[in-house]
Length: 208
Ligand code: GRF
Image (cartoon, rainbow, N blue to C red; front, side, top):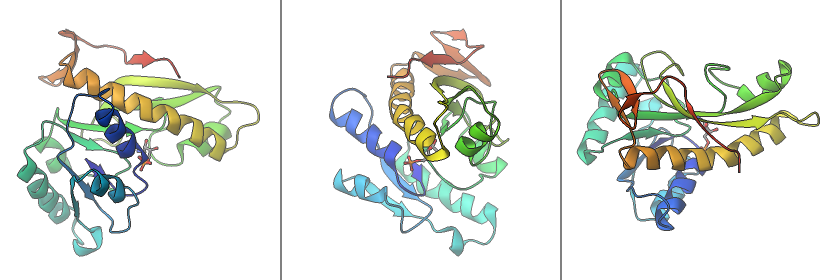
């Protein structure tokens, strides 16, 4: 699992595993920053943690090459991004195609990129949310397979909206991973399959 900061999604995933709600194992957590708060959750769970600092690799290709090497040591089935604040090179993405998953705080394809909560409010969107998707070369554009919708309230500011979306993200990522772990959802020849059939629209979970 790749992180850069707070690590609340990592924490939620570890809690779900611990509680038996998610049948998976986190092999390692790699952070792009030494001071990522999320590293503590992995350390507490006795999971290997590694830091690969972007400052040590001025060239993006070199960073991603080193990252690939670290990941391959653990031979993971999936590589999860959760607040990993780096744009990945196309070469890296190709190496892990079909196994690289990200969570993004918007109803993709709406609001790709950063500051999604601020922009949802600026654009007076009635509905916001979060998406889990396979990562492809283009930023925040790979096939989305699971979403949760979160209404924007009249009294919301970016912080209150972000907090409600984040709560739902934690449920969403766990459910997305369980679908993958169960083999209900998968990737074949550039297509997302749900129960063996091509998935044309993202599945939705209800905001809990
Ligand atoms: C989440 O909002 C996630 O959707 C986005 O970055 C944030 C990471 O939060 N990609 P955390 O580090 O998991 O708390």
